[in-house]
Amino acid sequence: MRPDKVKGWVDTPKDEAFEIRCADICDTYQKAVKRAEQGINTFSFDEKTGMQALEPVKPNKLVKPGHIEKREFEYTRHGTQALLAGMDVATGKIIPLIRDTRTEQDFADWLDLVLASDPKAAGWHLVMDQLNTHMSEAAVMKVAAIENTPANELGVKGKSGILKNMETRAAYLSDPSHKVVFHYTPKHASWLNQIEIWFSILVRRFLKRGIFTSTEDLKTRLHGFVDFFNERMAKPFKWTYRARPLQA
Image (cartoon, rainbow, N blue to C red; front, side):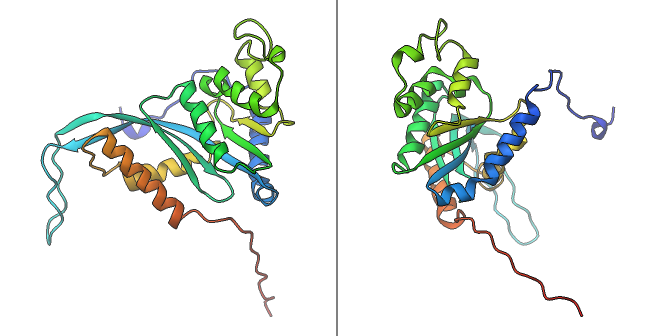
């Protein structure tokens, strides 16, 4: 079989709310800049798990005239790290959290981190996929504290109220009347999540050719890469228009 004649497919039902969710995500992106002018932040969020701290057993042979760089094929695995990252849609700024795991508590900790980045914000719109940790009890409790939701409305996980199941929790987190509003992408539509663009940059510019002596080394250098990106690349987005002179 020719490898160029093979392509992937998904044997799962299409998201019944695909059009609705897709329209909501696009509308959220479209309004991000104007909302930013009103003090309302819009972030695209996802996790990149299983980032390996790999170290070749021998140093690379560097480029020299007439020879390409050569890398030893054998390497040592020092472990993995998970990156939880949000990108400010209006500016491109990245807010990262690097952990050993990707649990609902890790996601709740990232929520704390992003909300603390702008304590005076008038509101938050957060775009993410439908992973169960994004509809968790810990996430609901973070938002509930901001919205001053009564405990009797929250109920008990698995039994009653807002916390009853993922559907009730997701409905609460995506309530448009809240200060913090979650927007869930359709299933199998990660291409709608703008943070994936930055993850591609991360892989090509940092991970692909990186050499890391430990998970701590990976974490430290990854923070450095994010800082460099935020300082040099992330800029406030401005709409510009220049009228072309009419052709004679």
